[in-house]
Image 1 (cartoon, rainbow, N blue to C red):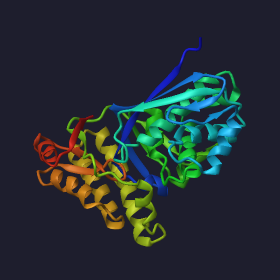
Image 2: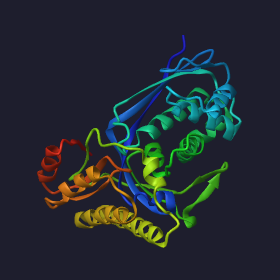
Image 3: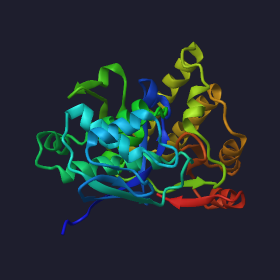
Image 4: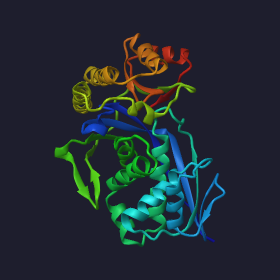
Length: 323
């Protein structure tokens, strides 16, 4: 009897610099260990997926089904992850039954979808560990992040950047650079420059409010990314990420808080923001805390010296998650 393979991938919270990762910038982000998605796969005679009635004898048929766009009622994240592996590496994947569970709130900017994709990629790599492409990915995990982005952005049409997938692949606190000087191509995949940092300082937490989520792709698609104002905002956001890294390394809490505030202020200059999301930022700031969006909206990351910010956000109906 085959033993199931499983991988658990945590949620992500950007700290500073977001969303400049999609525009050649820089981001500092961290995983959230208490929120995670787990993907399980068990070798089978067919590819099949919990929640779906479809069964596929080969990975080529999974890819054809995905191309056909008949995904109503299914969550095609795992299908897309497997399809990317098949096409990028001409990988002959072993058929498996896939399932997943998650505690990451969906559509609240905590990278719940990418956690599932990264988990699926890791499962497929493990199950096919004897193949050269699987060995290459196991030795260079940064490539997994680029594959996850390709699956979501190119196959599913989800507007996204690399930072979610990078921090979920590497784990912990990660400083990321995506500018031209920091980019390289490996096996046809673009990767940036990634550097794990030590532990985060105290006083940081994430807050989210159920029922205020939205489509991150829609948010990004409504912005004129060709304007000079947008380019300048992303440049300032990237500089804030670098300042945040420096602040953490020098135990400079005011500097870290300022970098978070600058990042949000630059986003607010060029993005249309949901008033319910901005309300959370304002509640934290009203009691002296610093705050930034943890993703594209619905959740925020806060740096506070006392409990007042957490209390103010709890009064708004937010869930508080320690880091």
